[in-house]
Length: 250
Ligand code: PGA
Image 1 (tube, rainbow, N blue to C red):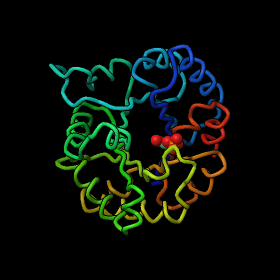
Image 2: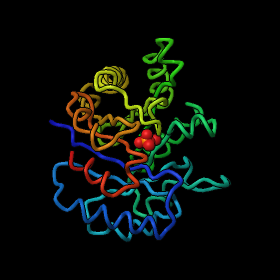
Image 3: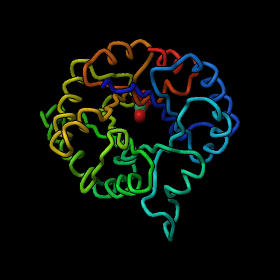
C-alpha cells in the first residue's frame, strides 16, 4: 500500500488571528485540486479556532504545535488533547527541535506528550533530528535512534496512521541549508529500520516519515522522489501562500 504524502505547515510563533485567517484562506483556495495527498496546517494556539472556521469543508487537516499529556488539571500553560480535539485538531507536532533546544524538552517529557496524544486520539508528529556537531562527530544515527526509542517508549499502535515521524536535522531548520536528498533518504531509511524494531513490520512500513528543514518549492520534488520520504514539515515557506502552494503541488 502506498503511503499517502503529507505536507505539513508549521507556522511557529507567527500570525495574528487576522493574518492566520488570510493565510489559511489562500491555502484552502490553492488546495481544491489536491486529491492524492494530505495537507496539515499548524497555526499558533491563538489562531486555531479561526483557522478551523476557515478550513471547514476543505480537506485540510488542523494541527497543533505542541500538546499536553493529561486531559485536564493543574498544568499551567499547557493545552490538553481534548481541548485541541474540541477545536478540530487531529494532529500535533511534538518534540520540535525548538521545544527541545530552546525550552529544554527531554525525550522523557516528549514521550509523555506522545503517549497522551495517542491514547486520547490525536496523531503525533514526533520530530527528531541531530545537531551539526552530532553529524560532524558521526553520531547522527545514534542520536536519531535514541530520540525515537525515547519518544516512543511504551507506545503501541495498531494503525500506522496513528503516528507520523518528522526528521528535521537541526542544522537545516530555518538556515536555508537543506539536507541533500541522499542524506535525507539515508536518515529516513534508518528511521524506518528503527521503527521496524519497535512496531509490527506491517505497521512500521506504513508509518509516514516527513522531512523538515528549509524545504522550499525548488527542493520538494527531489526530496519526495526518495523512497522513504513521505512528506514535508515546512516552516518558513509555509507562511507564504505562493511557496506553500507550490510545495503542496510537488
Ligand atoms: P524551516 O522550518 O522550513 O523554516 O526550516 C521547519 C521546521 O522547523 O519545522
